[in-house]
Length: 459
Image 1: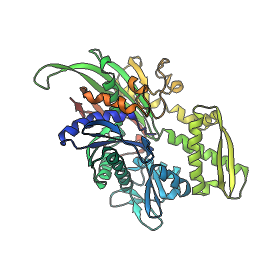
Image 2: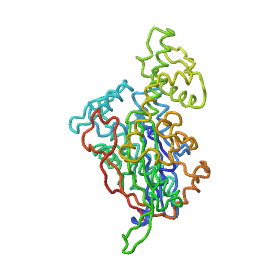
Image 3: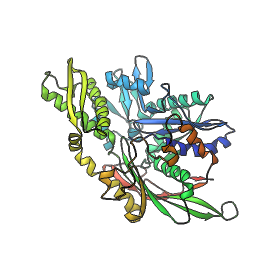
């Protein structure tokens, strides 16, 4: 997943709280935009920060849109349509933004989801989905409709009109990809106050909630985020520094992003697709029908959904049955799957787990033993790079759980989040951005960010 997280949203809302003052107490929203899931939050007068709920009263929504007859549906409704009409539902759109037809990420998407007809948009040098009636929908246009829906969630919760937002984007996004996000927001009629790198938001959130731990001695922390589509490792330092921005010397905490490594194709989606293909192969071996499940988009969509469920079950269990009724030609499927088998078909993926960490360490020019803590490290595979047996790995959809957040659940987390209303001072000194802003080639599927620029300063 590129994950959607309460801690990250809390950080965005700290930034949003300053914008609220500047726009005469008008509500502002934030969108934690992942390739698979999104969360929406808002700041409004009298309500420092809240997570906006969707129509199912849930905090996270699938970043997905589908077309059913003459209506558009989102979230859970779109997931239902996807199982029956996969060519009319669209997810993982963030991965396609600002890319040409020959981009390796687009080619990988076509391999994973071969039932879409994707054509080149010659005018914009990007891509578009072609429908049966000949109409074309670009990823930016589809994302714009999702952003409109996210604004609806925020407006329903805030009780007032919202026209401005802060959006998270992957830190490795180049200029074309960031521009595509801005275009999608513009199509949705939403003004983007700021695009913030997801790892910057994570680092800010940690610093805000661990303010008392920051002192004059720099200490280093690594955040490891394996999401649906990509994986990122970020090394940051926290330290109190003296500044004279307001005409007199004062001490304030500072966070510096020192190094970032990433793998754009390593994530839960790749695991799910491999499990889907394994189940399809095993079903065909049973020869219950003359037809191959690989040639039926609807059957493959069912297997994709079931593969996601089984993947989650096997994260806590040694074995499980994958089951789909009427998978193909009225034939049911029931296939046993073990965690050992899943690890076998994904063996090469596990070998790539540590690469972003090594890249981040190289860029940061810090020795491994200087990284004091690690957030969300995969316990077994990351040990060769940095062994911290006392630091537990975090659940998949909890990117940055601070001490306060760990004690909360969905019923009480809003009370916890409002603790950042104090507007703590935290400065982002510098942050890496993509060295290649305009081109994206195969060599950049994995890489590290090497350029530096001042980007955020919160007082």
